[in-house]
Length: 288
Figure 1 (cartoon, rainbow, N blue to C red):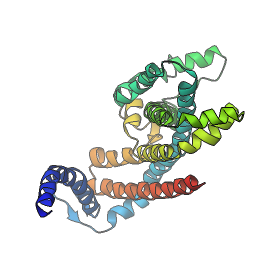
Figure 2 (figure 1 turned 180 degrees about the vertical axis):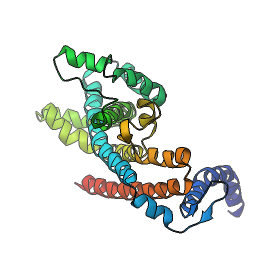
Figure 3 (figure 1 turned 90 degrees about the vertical axis):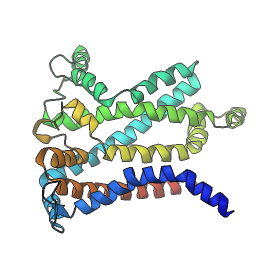
Figure 4 (figure 1 turned 120 degrees about the vertical axis):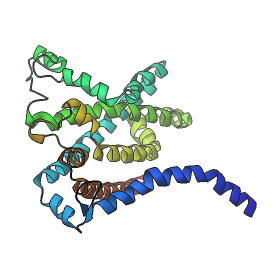
């Protein structure tokens, strides 16, 4: 038994070392740096000054507010659309594997590359989206250069980019539902709507909990979309700034790594609390 344990630890050693060096150590280092100030190569201990700075910084609260708004709107809307599309493809479309591949393509494509394409689609003067809106006589706002539209633009882009992963996972979960449930439902004359709400959704609770957790974490870490859509900026007047973009700006552009790490710790705690509450909620829903 002891020999097997030694061999097991030996096989696990490379993974444990990798996780420690690239996951655990950065977290501990970030926490330590949040109590230090000065240049990165010569930081000095300054206590809670960095936390006092970010909590009194209006830009930090704007970043947190934008991140929360993005999460509240983008995550549930994207998940709802994904469920409807996955159910439609699964139940109505033949050769669904083709559509799965089509939907999954954005997930394996660089967000920066997709963001550059969408920057032209959202262009206020010659963008495809405004061309279509004008064609049906609807208002055509300036999606990129209007500060009031910046967050809406990010939310739309975030919903689109989230669909790929969600749909593929949901399609796999739908295939694992026992078809006998639907056979019995047809025998008792259940409608499509009743089958969807009474059979499909309850069978997808665990999958939905997983996707909700992943999407919430991803929403709180949004950065690449902002960078790509607004050409390396956070919109006009930082109207589209998010928590991670704030961290990037303080660390890379302003040169305040201690402030950036303090914001990182706060964001980590927010994600941890939100994920914990979400999982508790999904467990209660799963009992019913």
